[in-house]
Image 1 (tube, rainbow, N blue to C red):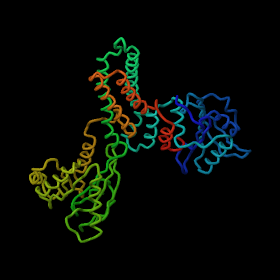
Image 2: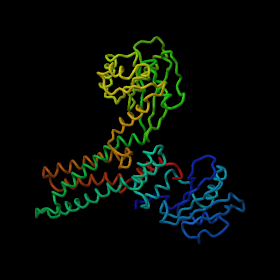
Image 3: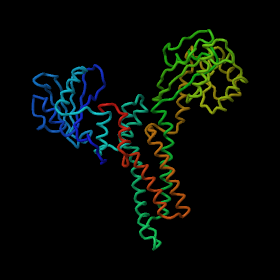
Length: 461
């Protein structure tokens, strides 16, 4: 259990459901006085004498005034979310009524909870480790199936278990090497070096795999920005409208209709793609506003994770398209070539026309032809089939940076053993590795670090 600062003996209260009018609202209390506080407001029966994990219907009253008819749920610690006595009050979803109940609880001795304080107490009371607690926030913020699966996997301890197993085995070797230091005069080895090298190899592979998953984790958590670029009148706005299945962008035969960037979000197979329709890019324009739009388009292209270069198959030739490909390759961009308006000519003729350039997807944005192929290509380009959503995937930047430190420590330990450096220096590297592993799961934390992490949670969680 972590050390607790001033305020952790308080009983806290907060609205656990979203702000606004709804059918019901849930208010949560946690702490030593939770049952006494609700009992002082609940006139139907003595709740302090009721068993845990039971529901009770009745009126909440303060000074004889009825506040609401509610359902009270009782959870006695340690078998509760926070590990403390927890009460949840399900009342009618009027913001005014719910606020009256919260104020009544405060009048009875509770204090308003800080952001994430319920989950922070769950961590401090050993109900969750820090990685699991952070996954709770990820689950609340999840907006796709992939992000939900990843967060739920981590809440269940999938990530933590791999780290704990590694940490326990390193601790065992660390203790043996520390013991060797006490017998340095006898020149004995308690730690089997062959087993230690095998552990280091396994640990490096595990750590590298987890660190490598962060790129995919970032995609799952934050989505992918996709800039749709191309010449004026290539059909960029039509493609955006077709992919979104709505008329989001103005479509016209007049070149340069799109003067600014338009951004919309599209969910494809559980991945969020932020589609950016940009102004058409051409070499010369005398329109100042269009020129500014082109500058923004180029900037968006530089910032985007993926670029869809859309071109009119009837207006562009293979030589011109090859120059675009060369430029995209020189800038090391991930890109998809989409040949639009392909319904005008037979596909066989188009493939012959652009035979020197592989990987083109021929579509018709207006006729919605082959746009599903474009969507599949987007997903394949991002996921590359490397990791499935059920695997352990790192989505937290703090975890990623700690894993990088772990990996470097493991490399230093191996180099030290191979170069036969003194055991006390090897022990230092092992301790550094254990430190960063402990930072991820919360075995090693500071109060400021915890306050920062949980301050990003919503109030009531």
